Structures are given as C-alpha cells and as structure tokens.
Length: 128
Image (tube, rainbow, N blue to C red):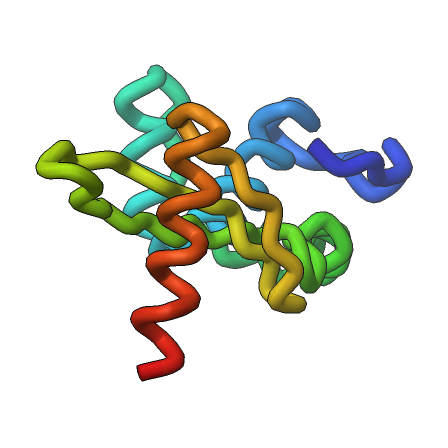
C-alpha cells in the first residue's frame, strides 16, 4: 500500500486500512465502485459505492501516481523462442530467451554437439 499522511484520513468513519484497501482495489484491478462495495461487504465492511467514489476522488491521484511509477519498465519482459528440430530421426527441443532489444540468451536443453548441429541447420535453412 501507499504511504499517505494520516491527517488526510481524519474525520473518516472507517479506518485508514479500509480506505486505502478500497482505493487500491479500484485503481489496481480496474473494478467499478459497486464491485469494490460488494467485495468489502463479503468481508463484513458495509459501505455504499458512493463512499468508494468519494475516497477515490480524494485519495486516488496519489495512488494512481504510485502505481504508474511501479509499472513495468521497458525491457522487463522476455519472450521465448522455441524450435523443434529433427536430427537423425530424433526430435530435439531448442529454446532461447529473447529480450525486446533483440539480445538473445540461448539456453538449450540438449548436448553441446546437438546445439552446434541445430544452429548450423537453422543458419543453412534461413539462407536458402
């Protein structure tokens, strides 16, 4: 959860934890106000969707800014390239992790000799 000064929570009927949890649910999971109201009602906290809306208007910008800064950065995702090769009648599996910047990190699950043969096979098949 985010840190907000306690003075902003003065004169609220519910505790700081409940308010922060409502705002966090709304902004983190793109729920509607009524969905947040139902989720809290299932946990024994009864409030109206209008209360959730007011809290999101009052405290939401702070949470949205914090979530925006925590979102994944460029280059945080890796993609997996997979190839099944048939060499001498046996099927082999070759995979590599590829970063968005096209740097690849080959992590095969086979012997070194099979890797060399499969790389040569891939190179010759792409040149034709």
